[in-house]
Each structure stands twice: as structure tokens, then as C-alpha cells.
Length: 101
Picture (cartoon, rainbow, N blue to C red):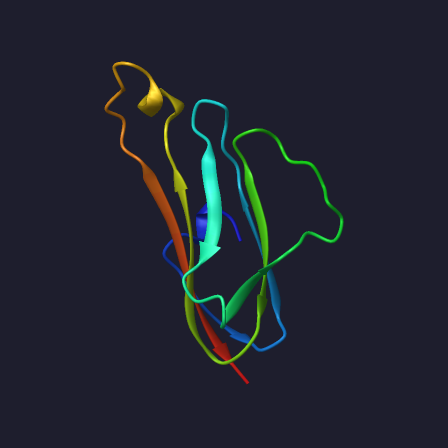
């Protein structure tokens, strides 16, 4: 999945794996992707441990059991922590996964 998938819903069987890759930058980094229900969609380690550029997010998830979960990540401008902070808005990525047997 990538930023082009934002807002979409997917129906996936138990046992399926998904990978999220969001390309950011030092100025506009993405922050930790997470599952709204880890019992349905559990984050799993990257088996290859591939390094990614600063500002990017790469997360793998495993469909554990039937249900619904949302994968989300937040992109915040680095200038938001400056003094004074910039007023650029955050960007939310979210995808819904409906897990089936």
C-alpha cells in the first residue's frame, strides 16, 4: 500500500500480509503506522530489515482474525516543532481492512 491507497477499503483473508510504504522527507516525515485493532491486523517485523530513507514509513501487517481494523499514519512538517512553529497542517493516511475467513 502507498499514499495512492489512502481512504480505500480492502477485504483480505486471515493469513494475508500487507506492506505499507509511505514516502516522506526530512522536511515532511511520516510517523509510525499503526493498526486500530492489533487483534485483527497485527504489526509484524520486516523479515529483510531493509533500511529506508529518513522520513519514510515502511510497516508490515498480518491479518490475524476476522474483523475490521484501520491502518493509519501521520505526516507532520518538521517545522511544526520549530520556535515559533509553522502553521502547515498535518496529513493523515488511513486504510480500512476488513478481514475474512
